[in-house]
Amino acid sequence: MKLSDARLFRTLKTLDTFVDRALQLPFKGPTLSGFQYNRDLLKAAVANTYIETVGNRADSLHLAIKNVTTSHIVWEYRMTVERLGTRFDLANKNVVLAFDYTEEDFYGDVQGFWIHGYTGEHGVTGKFKFLSCAIINSDIPQKIPLLSVPVHLGHNMATTVTWCLALVEPLVNSVELTVFDRGFFSKDLMLTLTHAEVPYLIFAPKNDKIKKEIELLDIGEKKKIRYELEVNKDKTMFRGETTLALLKQIFDKKSEKSYDWAFATNQESIDLEYVIPTYKKRWRIETGFRVQDEARISSKSKDPRIRFFYFAYEQVLQLLWIVLYKDEVSFKQFLLEMYELCAARYKEPR
Image (cartoon, rainbow, N blue to C red; front, side, top):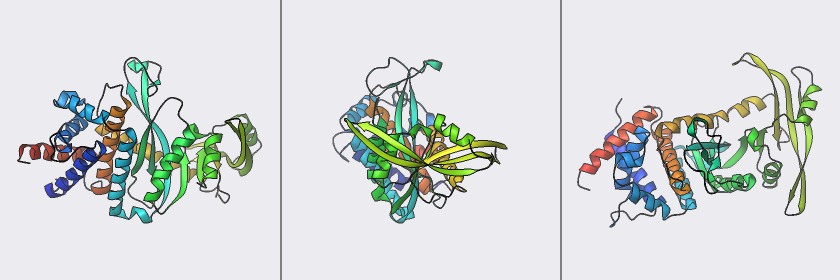
């Protein structure tokens, strides 16, 4: 099935608008704009290659990216979500959100605060990291990436998550739950979310205390216990508590094995019968990352602004496909047809 050129043209104009506004480029001005840059960006996304290999505008594009702040790109992505969200009444939805980190490989000398060191395996010496937030509701067919931000070495997880929530919450009616994997099991994050009255469910690593509590359970037993939290920040001790939901040797039909589970939550009325299925919805955000990889634009740049702009551009492509075309064509076909129309458009009088 081939998509309508008229529909794709309107979608391409949305992509033009994102590039122009994210990089503060004047439309039909003396400088290049999204109209020109999208041809190279889409070609690189389709081929999973470098901008430098598909055209001669890489230097100009990189200069334009360096002339804006990262927060400006974040905000324009958020505005794109808001505009597209009207297609499925996002502002009136009660949502479940998943947060996760994703990474991009870096090859070369690791320098600065934005490249996280790595082992050197397969030549990868470092990683650029991004914190992403996505909707994972079962009742919302569009599992859209709502927001992503780059994270530097030593960033404060609690501050970054709550900053993202501050941008996302006005887009929806309410946030019913936030879901995190074990890497987010942080006392600071749990206290911060509780103080902000944000409900959370975090997969808890099995430390000694949790292991001992699980050992006391019978096979198949589910139990809730209180877990005290203490965080020392700026010479001040902050105290609170969370609820640990412990489940021993619960059978998983997919793997046909039994597992112990432990979660932290600030929900008083959590239903232990549904806590595992609720958490498993978080894996949908990882599926989104795999889809986005099909549009990966390669880069050797050490500049976090350039790396983040490419990442945000890939997410805009994924967002457009999910909201407008997912039920009709594959992501790869959508990318190909967008590029073909963009290349044909460029040959015509503007």
